[in-house]
Length: 170
Image (cartoon, rainbow, N blue to C red):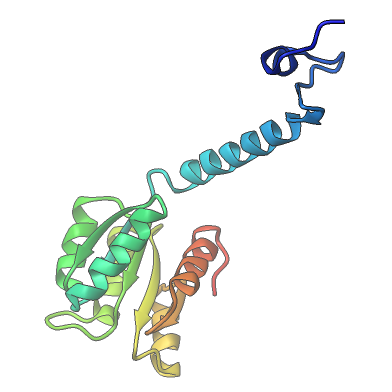
């Protein structure tokens, strides 16, 4: 009987359509790759067309958060204060606003009701080092979906964003 070369072994299929390679089934690896690809496509679909506006007077903070959201597949834009944020919300649809409280010209608690007036379905997460119980309660009354205390880890921010976008207020 002639020896089977590696190409013949690779191309040989059993009745179930599984590929054998040196006696090891590679169908499981193919299934794993397919599952990973499906998860990546699902993630891309979930974040596709989700516009996030990051509002903070600290340029490094807005840059860091915008980069984080873009890496996760979101569209991200920045505003340096509440006044600019309100103008941007009037011109473009945002599904989510990350809003600092203390900022010059117009702070987050002043901007929040205006943002909700111009875009009632936009979710707002307050992100501030000044998330006192009073500020959290006021933000909630004004329409904020959640509050996150600065500094927060990327994982905490993304977890809060996912919960808010899924309709689970925190």
